[in-house]
Image (tube, rainbow, N blue to C red; front, side):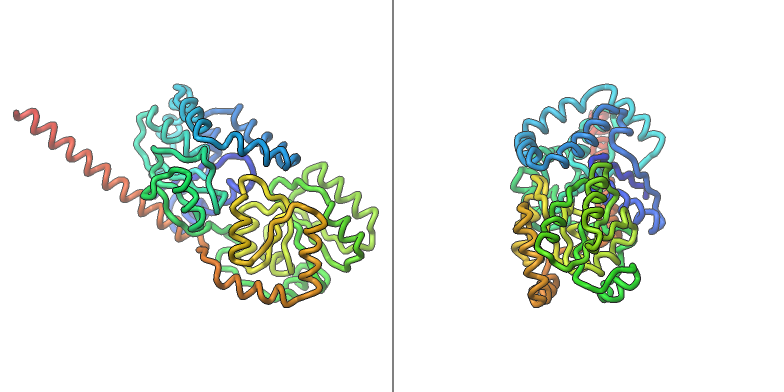
Length: 393
């Protein structure tokens, strides 16, 4: 089987699941194509726009919470489907398809789920097109489309929201979350052991996640210093230029504060094990990895796309969502003062109804592809028999 995983370069939240699925395909003896959606259809403007629009909104989260609800509509989906019917896109998609010959396509961004069925139809290509909701607990209203083969979501809450938004129930399927290769099969290790491996101090530790784009300001750290809290903070993620400058300025002003900045790491599992709490923008990948390794997560910038994450964390008691800096530090300070809170949350993690693993998801995709091909061949046989019958008549 040969699968194509298409992502949009609008944050690591779309790339990482595509990469995890691609790795799983290869690991299990299949073939995989990992490509940017807008490269496939030759849309350089939209490739540029999606990347920098998202980064701009991350720098201005209050604007994101205002803009995205206004654009997340069925009318937006209609405009995207109409735009997708351009001959230019169909021609480039057809060329790509004939070169790569995939058996199925998965888009890890809702835009692909909207436009690819239209483009494939224009190109005369019959292939199962799946969409994966990288938002985990929800999917955009603008992402609902009548021509999608299947929409996959790695949570029951996400499936319910997709159906509520208008996707047909038979087109929605619950899947396992595609963990990165480094986390698949990894189990938690004691905090002390993880800290020793990483060269960290053995003290109360906050893992500060800056997200895939590395955008954020150290306001949380200044509040921790103001309260004279003896914590260790580990800021992970490749920092943007302005973020790096802001954190370096904090470090110069507070040379005795235990701030560790390893940057981008490929062993995030060990850093999560070393932490007592994870804090940060925490997109879907960071949040799900935190849940997988049983580390409470405090989402410090609740964006529109992650609005249902707050409901999930609250319902199962495995984290918090709070935009106010002072209240964020209040929450973590209480965990520091009362360790029994974290002990209680550990038992809550055992009850979280989520599945993890890219391999299981790949099995679902292959089964759905085989079902699609079976139905298509059945329809083609019926058409052949009907045509033959008409010729006899």
